[in-house]
Image (cartoon, rainbow over all chains, first blue to last red; front, side):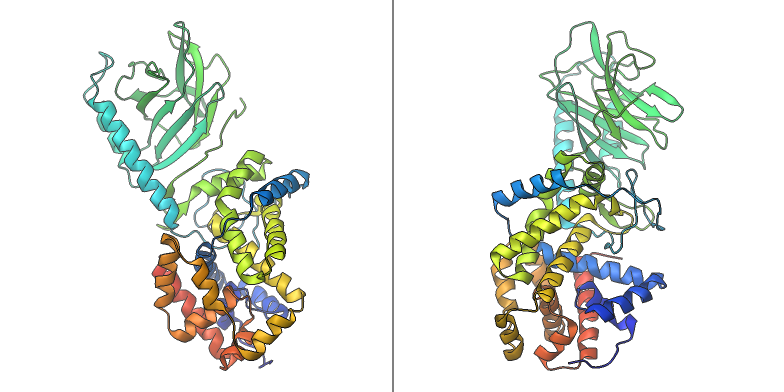
Length: 268
Length: 202
């Protein structure tokens, strides 16, 4: 039942719900291309629609996963395009290309829950750490405060990274505080002549990360000796824009610059 | 120096300083790795999105084996076009859901609709409630259900028929016996209310 053409701006909802047929879809695409506010609205509405998809989640068969992974392995990927649309809040890293019609970032419930759970876990582990007897005479009174400042920062974000020689690192980053907290678990034991050293890898060169934290050795970059494979939490300060976090194995006396390959690099 | 390992396997949400919006950077960061051809990252993305993808495709397509086929295409499309995901413009889940839903509705519309679907349209007995009933049973679902409940009856029907049923607004208008313009308005108003209730968007 055709009822004539609808004005494009009234179609934002139907558009977000993919409830337009070909002609209407083409019409609103043209409209939205010239109307930033309309594009934003439709993006927002798509974000809401995506929640409707999440609400009907059904696990597919295990066989499907194998088929998808196998098909992906055979499928050539698109190269990123060079154009970059104006983005209100670009990602800190990674490629960006033109997406024809993505939604906007939404306040994802699950990630927020994950944040809360992991933040609580970290605070608990930090508290346990802080309650332990001082592991090193160099521990300073303010050490725990730096860790707490990062964990409590409004923009605290958590990253996990694998360490190639074994183990995983957890980093909580606060751009607001200009600091991060680093911990690692499952670390390989090193001979006495070697230590793990943390680096800030920047455009203007690499430097040992200035550390504070329970058991930090007092020397920049040098991580506390792992106990049962775990080290940290230590707070690293003095971050500059564009810095990445690196980890390498260095002589126990410490190195002013990396002397071996990075065993972990985290884009912050 | 080369990056040895930069793949964050899980990243918490963070708030964008400019807009104050929350961003689920975990999946976004994984997608950038997928764009670089990282198959392990793709497997992690698969784990995160395959259930919503399959769910929405099945909801629209209905036929189980065809649903698997379409969902599979969607997930390979995520792999193929990962470089086109633009984290500055939307959440990864919204991007993936958009691909999935559009692919599903395109498929059912190109199939010219089975006799059963035609029959449903003709009689107006579309089982959208059945879809919602079988599917909504966890926390997130409970929230969506509650928010759907805050819509007016016509808004809710318009939104769910279009999204879960895959119908065009003209078909929805036919099913509900209201003018197409009214359906458009209700879809938009309903989604706005849903957006505000779910706390997504600005």
